[in-house]
Length: 401
Ligand code: AMP
Ligand code: MG
Image (cartoon, rainbow, N blue to C red; front, side, top):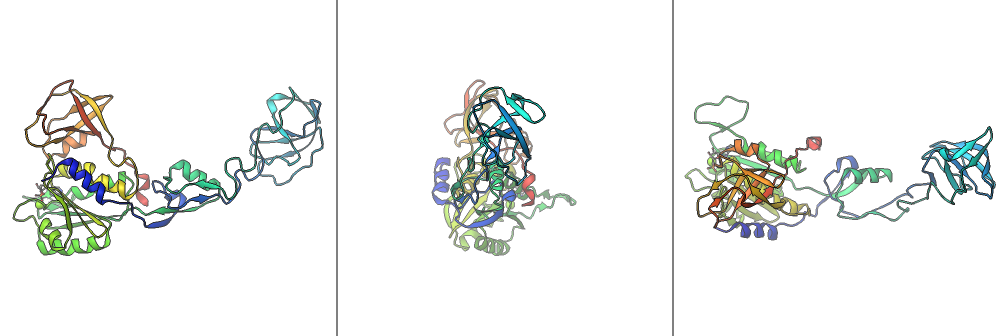
């Protein structure tokens, strides 16, 4: 049995960025990371652009200008201005090459054919220079940039519709157990609804991982070997739940051994989630999490999350940890450090009742895990406690990816 710190170090040391790349439509690339530098195919803006509604003029010594035409946004024509001439112009329109400034309409007095400016305009005022944001051929975005909505907008403004990005891992979730039945079907005596697979699918979706398959097997050694063999050969990450303890019908450990998965650790000194396995076969990472749902989810956040962040080359590698003042008393048994379902709010943390590893009800109310080290047996009100903040947002928009 190893410590939590040793387990985390092992995952960090044995996980590395996936170097496979893929092409994505810009609007489908949210959350991905650029695998190549992107150079601008155009000057942006592609022409001298008016920043305001007003008049483009060719400066001279006087304040009066003859208005000789108009350029609207999108107009392709370029009126030729002589000194002392102006054209009516609007935001986003191409400023004629011969114009040297734009004055805003609020700062001029108009007559039928002339304008008088309030003061002497400054050269180039209110004109966005050609290539002001980025020049044609210059670096627009560097490799490693995460695609956010702003990044997508910027790429599209340069006319770029597709980008090369690092692939996200292909992930398999495997649930094991004879007692499990599909939610939505009849529950007969002795059975429970299978919740782990889609709970883990939900957390993966919430972290923008969409290439996920689900597999369900009973407590059957040969079936376990068969299913895991294919998945380990084809996926980047395999997450198994249940069947990793020492019961007579726990076959996952034996199957992983048979498949020559290299064990990096088995059993972590912690509560919940002691019987947890992490291993690798070639480049595939394998986590076997305890079947108890609250333990499985805790272990996901504390351990599997790290492997995913490393695979995506994302930082920070771990979920944020802060200190918060406890609003509850909690008595813990000696022996193992404990992750406790908790509610964090404005510097305070409430440790909830019902910490049993089978209880998702408590987890459903939580937005954090309070961490209590091995040596501490009592948390009292106002004690400072370590808190891991959970990513609780749920991003349904990207489910179609
Ligand atoms: P195990 O780790 O297989 O011994 O399972 C521990 C506990 O978790 C048992 O009470 C199982 O019924 C329960 N369990 C295991 N897998 C699941 C699952 N996929 N969904 C819900 N509960 C599960
Ligand atoms: Mg089981």
